[in-house]
Structure formats: C-alpha cells, structure tokens
Image (tube, rainbow, N blue to C red; front, side, top):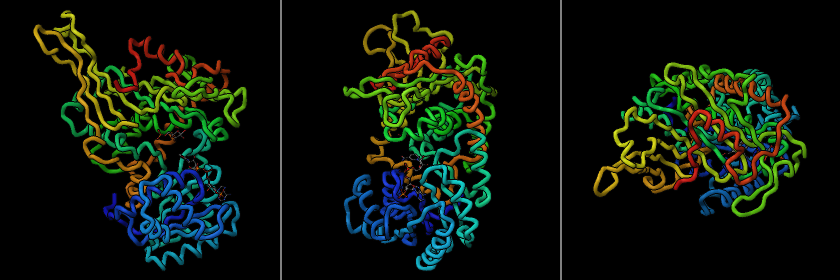
Length: 496
Ligand SMILES: NC(=O)C1=CN([C@@H]2O[C@H](COP(=O)(O)OP(=O)(O)OC[C@H]3O[C@@H](n4cnc5c(N)ncnc54)[C@H](OP(=O)(O)O)[C@@H]3O)[C@@H](O)[C@H]2O)C=CC1
Ligand SMILES: O=C1O[C@H](COP(=O)(O)O)[C@@H](O)[C@H](O)[C@H]1O
C-alpha cells in the first residue's frame, strides 16, 4: 500500500455519459476534490459518443453534481469541472485511440501529472477487452508514472468468459495494476467486518464452530429490474449479486486473521475461504439452493408488475430474481456452520444485514423460570442503517429472576454525526493511492465463478416454476424451508 495522500493523476473515463458516471463517479470525485483528497494536479478525459466538446461534458458533470451530489456551490463546481476534457470516440474505432493519446500526453504535460494514469471502464462489459487491448497497442499505457485499470462489474458471465477477459486485460496490465470494482467492498460496514472481528477480544475467540450456530447474510431490494432487463435477464440474481457482493461478504466473515493488514495478506486469506467452500452437490441442489422470480404484488402500497411483464423481459423468462443458499465452508474453523445467503429484487424492504447467531449455552439455568430467552446475536447493519446490534439476555427489572432479551446498539451515523462517504468515493480514493485491498483479485473472481457456475449449470437445464413469490414479500417459501430443516429461521431484516 502506498502512502501518498493526494496523488496527481489523469483519469481516462470510458463511458463518461453513462448512468454510473453521472450518478456515482462525478459526485464522488467532486467530494474527494472538496475534501482535498484529490490533488489540484488532476485531469479527467471523458470518452463517449453523444456529446460534442469539453464545454458540454463540463455542463454534464455539473448537472450530475447538482442532481446527485451534496453541493450547490457553483464556484467550487466550476473550478472542479475545468479539469474535465472530452473526446468523442467510438471505442471500436481503432483510429480514435491515436487522437486520445495526443490529448492525454498534452494534459500530462500541462498538469504535470508525472505520467500517472487511471483508466476507468464504466461501460458495457462487451467493450472491456477491446479497450484494454487498444490502450496497449496505441501506446496509452506507455508511461513513466503508474498505470491502473479500474474495471466495473460484471467481470465475465461465467468462469470461461471471465478467463478470456482476464487474459485480454492482462496483456496490457499486470495483476497489481487491475482494480476490479465490487462496490460492496467500499461500504462502511462491510469494511468494518474485519475491524469488528479482529479488534475485539470478546468476538474473535467465539468466531468459530464451537460458538456460532449459523450466519445469515441478506441483501434485499425493493427495486425491480428497472431499465436493465437486457443485461439482467442474461444474468439473474446469482451472477448479478451472489458471485460478487454476497461471496465477498462471506469471505470477510469467514477468513482467518491475516498476518498483516496488507492487500496481499488479506486477499490470500479470502481466497482460502473460497477454496474451502464445499463443492455444489448437483444431485441434491434443492437441499442447498433456492431460486425465485417475482410476480406482481405491492411495494410500499403501490401495485407493481411481475418480472415477466417488465420492459424487455421475455414473457417466459426463466431468470431468477431471487437467490437463497446454504454455503458450507469445510475448514477447521467453520465445519458444520451453515452460512445462509439470500438476495432478491422486489422484496419487502431495502436492507443489507448480517446476523451472526451464537449457539445456546449448554445448560441455561434460566431455561425453566418462565423467562423469555433468545439466542445471542450480533447483527451487522450494512444498509440503509449502518452499525451493529448485540442481542443479549438480562434480568427483567423487578422481583424474581426472570430474563428478558435486550439490544445494545451502535450506529455509525449517530456516533460520527455525519453521513459516511459513498462507497465509490472511498474506492476511487483507494485507487488513486494505489491501495487495492478493497478490490477483487483475479483468484477470488475465478473461484467465485467456479462455485456459482455449478449452480447455474443445473438451473439452466431445469425449467423453473415461476413466478414463485409476490413482489413485496420476503421470497419463496422454499427459502424458509431451507433453514427450517436445520432447525433455524431467517431473522427479520426489519429493525423493531
Ligand atoms: N449504473 C449503475 O448503477 C451500475 C453500473 N455498473 C457497471 O458500470 C458499467 C457502466 O454502466 P452504466 O453507466 O449503467 O451504462 P450506460 O449504458 O448508462 O452507459 C454506457 C456508456 O458507454 C458509452 N458507450 C456505449 N457504446 C460506446 C462506444 N461504442 N464507444 C464509446 N462509448 C460508448 C455510452 O456513451 P454514448 O452513448 O454517449 O456513446 C455511455 O457513456 C457497466 O459495466 C455496468 O455493469 C455497475 C454497478 C452499478
Ligand atoms: O451490483 C449491483 O448492486 C445493486 C445493489 O447495490 P446496493 O448498493 O444498492 O445494495 C443491484 O441493484 C444491482 O442489480 C447490481 O448490479
């Protein structure tokens, strides 16, 4: 990890007019600029087709900050956007890369950037390989400074396509120059998992199969497929959410303490978790994994259509919009502890939450006193709330010894008194500083694909009975049975 706090760099942004750039990247870069975490010596070259010139891009960026950012200070915004330049460029057209190189070299001198270059691919994945190859062939990666490639998800569609893409980008960039974005790794409370585990004497000794009965990870959304059916219908929940975000949370919860907090040491521990995942038992897949697709229903009191009635979705689509699974990690620490994972669209609430359920103590003295005894839980609230809750049993005030469950709560928003930074802001800053810890290494990507491919292969050959959950619910009943047969049930994602 490097230590420069506000390094100068050129950022070459492919997909400068896209949704991601507009909603996330410009407001995040602007926040870094305002906080002084972006050196004044920076320039952004936006690449897309629909705009004409620098002035139009600067207006576009300004509009993005005013719409999605937290500032209305025109003077600051204008100063920020003056660093933006535009090249109208079809990425499939080889000739335009020469022009791009001329512009980049000029800005490098003008802003004294020392040849530092970040190439950000915020466009459809079909272009990732082509762009990376051109960057090398046309000399854009020939530089005396650092060169880094930031690549958006999805990283491939399955293991085979991910390998092909990786080979293409590795021709132009070394592994340590590739920053594969998983925006969950930029979330405040996802980054907090390691701190909670490794800095608290009361948790780490209990963090194993002797004391934990099961771990539940839920990421539910109320949104449907929106305008993304062309992508989503070919992916489904397993590729869109499980292969990346959900698996990443599993690795952070299950990994061994790293020797040091360095990128390589942390990644190496995460990889070991993925290697220890019990392979998918294809013959008994229904005992471990459940898929679902939403039908019509109600979200926040409003009628919404089913997935198959959404724009650009085939009316017989077999794509899952819901996934639930029981993952087993066959190693010394976790043997016998199920990790239940579920995610879906059009569910009852927007929430990402992790519940660590501890085992009941072997002989509870208060069991027969008419007490209300509940298992100890550690709940990590990822979003929309950020914080942790510890569920304990205490004596109910008054005469006699009767127990009652209570919750100890910590909310990061409450304590820090300010909104935590947007995930993209943190990840962009990490990339500028050369810290790849919160980006995914190729080995993690490959192992995650290998795991989910096995499930997809079975599902793709079996017709599904869809729709099987109404919009606004918590998913199909089979997902409840998954836990019930192990003697557990899903903990509520709604805070009481
Ligand atoms: N949007 C989001 O919230 C998220 C997006 N992502 C990922 O980020 C990436 C971008 O997504 P998103 O912004 O939504 O996509 P959009 O479709 O909104 O934007 C695509 C961008 O690519 C440009 N583009 C398309 N074809 C070409 C071409 N031939 N030559 C040059 N530019 C081209 C478009 O510009 P123009 O039409 O002007 O040429 C536009 O700027 C994808 O990989 C997506 O999976 C990941 C997580 C969340
Ligand atoms: O990567 C993706 O994530 C979003 C959910 O992200 P969150 O930060 O709002 O939890 C999901 O809607 C989208 O389908 C997926 O591509």
